[in-house]
Structure formats: structure tokens, C-alpha cells
Length: 446
Image (cartoon, helix red, strand yellow):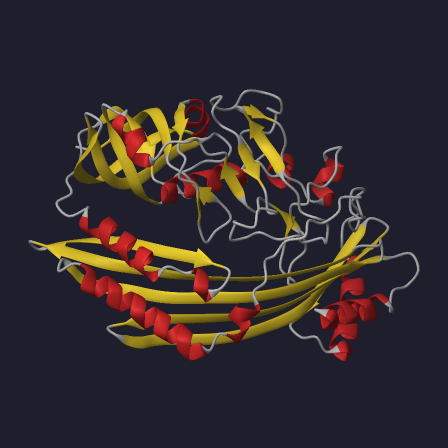
């Protein structure tokens, strides 16, 4: 970490009068182990590092990056960024971020134990996960993959405007994808476990979840078409919320690509919905103390009791919208700062999924979707996706169903939320999942 700051400071020492400069330096180490048929199918141990340099002069922006920390190369990179300024279109809102007075939250996101964890132990974890899945149920006929993945990321952002920020995080997860078979039929299922260090991981749970998801779909049939109450499993609701979150960023709003662009202050969902993007929550897999521009991250309430309160912004979209950054810049060293959600979650209710299902007389538990991103229009809100899950009859889970489509609009689905479950679960993505009950959804099946 001191090395990254020193390098960024050195680059700033080359700055000319009249220009703003931002230096983003990143060092990342990743390990991925994939087991197959009780052997190591793939082992990747990778290390990457690099620096992105952004130069702003007279409303014009130039950017260049290099996949090295070598100062001689970075001098050339700065020169390239300066050259690129001449080709940029002037933009009155273009500027490097400035300190906004928000103090960063002290977050405990780094575990030295992960850096010291031997590769052999990581390999053993993947192999053990595959064994647990394969031995769990005689109907498991294959393990498509059993993986151990981890990452260690360090970054620094320093600017001529006075920003000087560092972050350091570790993360790891186990995941299993399995095949269950019976009477010539096969079904798939997955399970996972996430943590900051290997000791946080629960391979038994990951294996059990994968086996349950696969085996409970055996014998699935196509349901009759109907309008039903659906219960979204946390894995599905996390993907659904990711789509919603993509419509709540300032860049989408400014480009006219958000169905909520003109709806600040309006009721956009049921009163039970409070949607928060909070990268300072250490439980989030993507938690971080600083954003891609070096500003402190913060808890942003986007929707409260169904009312749309704000969008997320980086410094550019904040200025152009007449406001300020929400600490929501996202980027790698090889790109300029974008804007997006970082750790999005619904405020959970109090009841379990089983309790929610017990109140549904006629409905569906949706445990998987396909083609979600291609089936959603973020401008109109039209929503249509393939799905699979379990029928709900009289408050109890019934036969498995597949090869059907659920359709509605994002606007209507948010308004038709009947209850938010209490089973909040952070996943290896930027959104958390929770069981979500939505009424009056069109199910197109047989």
C-alpha cells in the first residue's frame, strides 16, 4: 500500500500548471481452483498491477493506463494522457473529483490469513467441496464444477485536488454446480459460501444447497399459464435488484436510459420497500471504504418506504445533475470512473421463506431465472424471463416446475411487493438477496 501511494505521488510530481491530474494505482492477486472428477481441472494464480492517469485541462479530459508500476513507463503514460486531451470534446462539467468533507469509515476488510493461506490448502478446499457434493445423494450424477476463488486487492487514488485515498480488501468463496439425475432426467443446482478469509467458508452448506436445488427439481413439469403470487428466492431477487439498481445510477438518468429518470420524490414501490446502497456494510462481499475517485463511500438510501429519494452519482454525474457525488464511482485502473451501485440491499423483514410461503394459497417459488438481462428493458421497464421453481399450493411447496416465463414490468413488480423476507443473504456480487413476495405476476406455461 505505501508503494502504491509513493508511485501515485511521484506521478503527481510531474504535473504541469493548469492541469488537474488523477492517479489510480491497483495491485491485485487472485487464485482460482476448479475440481472435476476428484482431480484439479484448472489452477490459476494471477497477479496484476497497473496505473490509470487522467488529465483534465480546460474542460477536456485525456486518459491513459499502463499495466505496470515502472516509473519510466508511467512517465510515458502521463504524456499519452496529455496528448489525448487534445482530441477530447470540451465539457463544462468535466473535472477531477475534489474532497467533499465526508470522512471515510474505518472498515475491517483485509485478512492477512488469506494472503498467507497456502495454495495447496485452496486446492484441497475445492476437492473437498466436490467430494461433499458427490457423496451427499445417490441422485447426484455429476459435478459440473467445484471451485475455490479468492482475491486480494489494494488500491490508491491521489489527485492534484487534494484527494489521497487507499483501500485494501480480501474476499473468497466456494461454489458448486451439480447435476442430479433420475429416470433419464437431469436437473442442475448450485451452492456457494462467501467470506473474507478461508476460515469463514462453509463447504458443507455450499454442498447441501447445491444438492437440494438440483434434486428438488427432478420431475419438473411445465405449469399452466396463470396470474400468480410469486416468491423470489434470494438468489433470484439479488439479480432482480441488480437490474433495478442499474436504473438508479446518475449516468443512466442523464442518458435517458432509466425508467425512473423523472420520478424523484414519487412513490415507485410498495411501502414495505426500502432500498439501500451501503458499501460501508462489512457484511457485503463488495464492501469498500473509498470509491473509484478516492472519495469516502457512504450509506445511500435510494428508496425509502416505497418513495424514490436519490440516484447514485460519481463527481461528474453529480455536478451535471446539480448535486454532488454519492461516493459511487466505480472503475478499474484501466478505465475512467463510471458510476453504479456497490452494495445494494433491501431492508429485510422478519419472517423466513417458509413463513412467507405458508401465506400463499396459489403461487410459485422462483428459484432460478434465465435470460434476465436480455429480457428486461431498463427504459420501458418491460420484464420477461424464463424461470424454474416450485409450485405453491395451500401454503405448501408442491411439484417442481420449469420451462415457463414470468412477465410484468419493473414498475408494477415493485408496486406489487407484498412482503420482504428476513433472510437477507450477501452473495458474491454487488447485491444481496432476500425472499421477496410479489403479487399478480403473469406466468406463461402450458
